[in-house]
Length: 283
Ligand SMILES: NC(=O)c1ccc[n+]([C@@H]2O[C@H](COP(=O)([O-])OP(=O)(O)OC[C@H]3O[C@@H](n4cnc5c(N)ncnc54)[C@H](OP(=O)(O)O)[C@@H]3O)[C@@H](O)[C@H]2O)c1
View 1 (cartoon, rainbow, N blue to C red):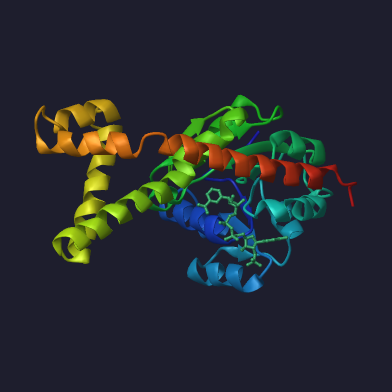
View 2 (cartoon, rainbow, N blue to C red):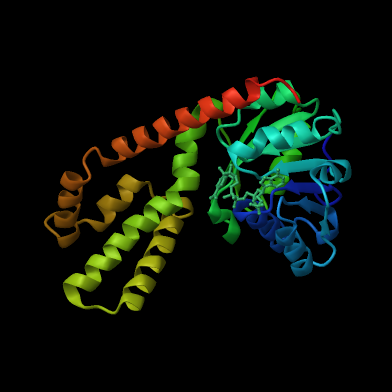
């Protein structure tokens, strides 16, 4: 059974963008103390920098050392690196340990076939850096309810953990993890047009737009509004917002359907590539 996070030892393999965001956020939220964390990265300088930033955090010299130290290990490497890491740690994982993949096209079934420990898949989001947004949680057969609760208690310090079905990995990741980039893109377009059409200073438009998005998020999460109700509330009949919404309805028609088809097509390609890697004989 996984220990509660106040005493848990947590390992990270890969301290690039997401690995370091998770470490920074879990420390900033107070969920973990640096002494509870051991991390390794292919380029050692990255993890050594993290150890300097968080005195007490152990920079391991190998991925095996991370596994030997931890109850719970986050694998934060790209899909193409996964098989190499699994081959390396396979001999040292224990049935009592929990290994968490944060990589969407690596299937739980593949990991359960390769490792003797308990397996979870968690898709974080850059929003977790601000101790917000969701983390998407999926579990293998060997995780019992107490393991799931202990992992979710840890993740709840930086996010809203939401259990999903693995068959919905792509669409839920599109919304939760790609969504910040998609909506930042829409915001960027809005800001650029505001500057071009009216001459408003760029910084002022950016500040207004960013606070608008934050307030909108709060209305949707804490304020009891659905997206539909919020539009109705702002767009009074015959008003200016209603005119703008009519234009958006025409111009955006089908755009998100096409976007979802594109992300799913890329995901299918990644699934095939990762699946082929796991079919190769065990080294
Ligand atoms: N970025 C996001 O918003 C996001 C959100 C959800 C999930 N994810 C998933 O998170 C995973 C990592 O993404 P990322 O953006 O963090 O990528 P990244 O910045 O490239 O980080 C990957 C890290 O893994 C290290 N690494 C590679 N092979 C290794 C090995 N054999 N042993 C130890 N460390 C190794 C790399 O080391 P080097 O320093 O040598 O390159 C690098 O620091 C991806 O699968 C991605 O899909 C990302």
